[in-house]
Image (cartoon, helix red, strand yellow):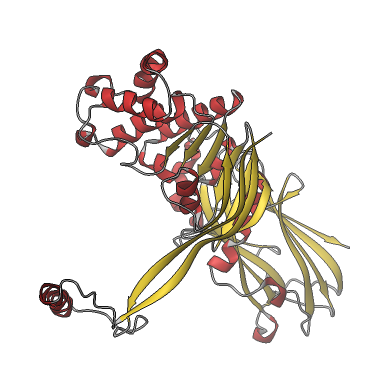
Length: 426
């Protein structure tokens, strides 16, 4: 049974730009900025009823465009996409915080949302008063709220501050109480944005467990996050948004892998087809990243990652090589590896080959990494295929524990990292 149905949903914003400013190249010095604002104040005081529009250029921006999807009762949906893709706008519309420009939404049941710190609570009221206020907004009676009150307080761990106005809460306390209220007051639909990142790791794990419990009770969860580990552990389905449109709607693992694969474009590398071309000496046919026989871009650190290269050599080559480096997103190189162990004069005869590298991931802390690949012939610049990059994410086998070996990661570029190569004639 569908609990949410969205049809042809679009959201348009009107953005104003100053036509006198070349946005691509101009910048304001502080003096210019102060003069600009002072001039605007003077104009408004002199002509208070006449808006100054002659230097304003209006632009339409579609945050969402023709969105269509259905969600069934009990589904745990991960909403995935880069910043600006439209994720938060979608949740705000579903929460009725903002109105859509066009389209229709059908929702069944009570909706509780946790979209950003500061949403949903009255800052002047105490924690106790806000619990009852939020319950009343959800349509619950005082008796129903009272039954859940102790559970909410225990989960949020704010007993000492229940009678303190929430405006005096830290951001962590605020989020803990807000999530506890949203999750415990029995909404049929729970909407959660990236706000959980404010909490500590232990509380995030606690929240993920609660959202899973909520879904097992037949309620529906929509979860926006950039943490692929959290999405993978919680969600059974995924919506992938790009530039305000849905590019994938289906299995959560597939959605995550498609999102990670799109990291190629984010890193501004050329289209992969450019690399699968004939050269004077060899042809690269395919590259696969897989784990336990399953291709993807998100891998668990409990099993090896396999990089598979399929290629053909047209001639006997003395110094052919396949090389890859593994780096953090900020450019720190953990290690590099060559399929021939770096032997520059190793002979390899013409033919079709498959080379596979097996990389143990247990030393890597969870997070995003870049794999840079180079293939060519030593000393023959014309025959080197320029580096190709993949963006991957490594997940912990148990998100709640830390691997003791992570401590040596700062020195990984200086150690012989465990990579086993296997080369076969096809």
